[in-house]
Structures are given as structure tokens and as C-alpha cells.
Length: 173
Image (tube, rainbow, N blue to C red; front, top):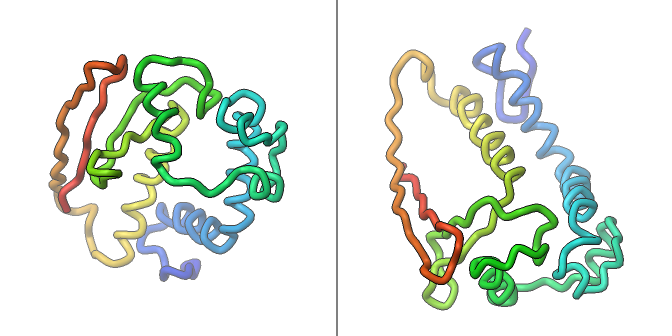
């Protein structure tokens, strides 16, 4: 008998683990998000300029974070992002080295937003991509029997004042 998931029964046995993971993450979103925040704060609370400026004091719990760190916009972080883009390698926003800059397709004040990433974030992107096919298998039959065609638009961009290359990636569906 197939395991019942909120999304529907798994099409393939190999998809059951992934669908269970999705169900667990979405059913327990509050506790999952609290754990993710605690992990981020544990890695960064004592080392980043941004969290020190907000007097977090090394705390890793949600309530302290909410009381000390204000809700902000991209524009509030822009000076810090620009410092990093100009080559400042001190732990301004992250306790880990920045591995790449990405740009968003949206803008802030008419300019594309720069998104900073660390190596660990690549693992998160990979995990997210691994969740797509089991969900698609629920709704489209025999996807594993055919071929797929993906259109990716990749355009190199450079900022002469930055030591980092910036890559703009979008996907056409």
C-alpha cells in the first residue's frame, strides 16, 4: 500500500522519501525555521559586524533575534554589500567567506540587487532542485520515459570596482 502524502500518493517508490521530507518540512515549518535561524545565528552571531551592530550579544534564539535585529530592506544592507563587492573580506554579513555574487531579476532603485552566497548555500540550492522531480511525477505521468529541455540564460556581468565576478542567471519555463 502506498504511503499517503498531503500532495497525493507517490508515483514511484524512490520518491517516497523526498515527499516525506517535503511533508515534514511544511507540516513543521515553524520548528524547522527556528532551527535554521538558530544554525545561522550560531555560525554568525559572534563574528559578523551586522549582528554586533544590532547588539545580538551572541544569542541564538528567535525571541532575542526578534527583539534586537530590526526588519530591514535591501537598501539598508546595500552599503555592506558594496563593501564586500569592493573586496572587503572581513565578516560583515557572514562568518563564512562569500563564494559568489548573484543578481536578481528584480531591482532596487532601478539597479539589480546583488545576492551574496556562501558555499553552504550551494548545498541548499542542490537540495531544492532535487525536490522538483518527485513532485512533478505526482502530476505528469512517465516523465522518466522521455527527454527534457531546459532553457537557461546565463550572462556574465562584471563590476570593475569589484573583485568578484557577478553572474545573472534566469530560467525560461
